[in-house]
View 1 (tube, one colour):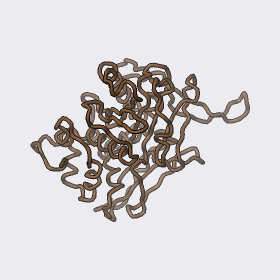
View 2 (tube, one colour):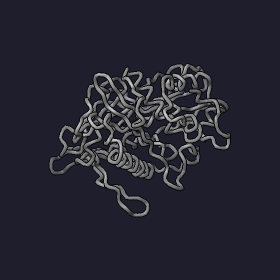
View 3 (spheres, helix red, strand yellow):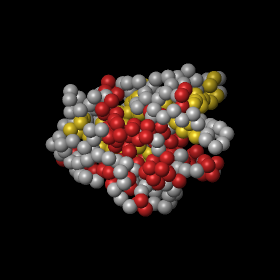
View 4 (cartoon, helix red, strand yellow):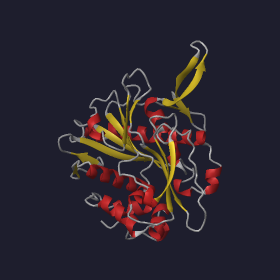
Length: 356
């Protein structure tokens, strides 16, 4: 499967694919070729979709690379869902991306002016709405179709969700998806006069309001609304930046700016490193959100691996999740190219779920 050989008119290229053709190095392309090795194009449309819609196909290739990395055998003998995993711990994965609303800006339209005008709360709210739509749409499809398939009905079923819904979508970290699944939004410290000391206050959102005024209920895993969905896989860093981080390219003008979890501090740690100093794994930035009401739970041990952050509710009545994350877990990453100009780090906004 040659994903880089054009099979459609260049006018139909997705902007990201056009960018890859024009600017990606062979080292970068080799990373994606390694992800695609062994992937089966079951309906003969994958290359066309990769070149014309890009993001959903890219997300599938990343997920397949993760499954290979973990030695999970994939059975491509079924039309759906996307990945049927066999072996000692069989489960299924259906991939979905959160995309821009009708008339909304594409994620590929990110530019410096958009960044300068960015309002973090507006970005988070849009992310929450689009992610909620992606999860609920796939759940409805499970009820109509996936749940009726004999190779699905007795296995844990996992949704793999990636956000591509707007420019600079990666600033959301895991805050929007945590709202969607548990209602949990963020924690803050404030002085409580009754106890005479600072206390941690957890904030939750029961719903998000769309621009038209309608409300979208949140907390799909906080209540037994979707018991058939065992867990959600998620990453806001499975982007072309992941490819560049794993690439053998040694371009001295490439820098990686990141936010990483600091388990000993209230906020994330920020770093800016040259390519030759920077290290990132395939699994870095991957999240697993477990459903406490799942009919067929996904075992915590399956993804208890370096780079992976897992969320679950110890008490389904309490929406504040337990987080299993290593110190230094990746929250955000941006690739900065300084060729032709001085270095101007972006300094990511720490308010976007800085604790991840």
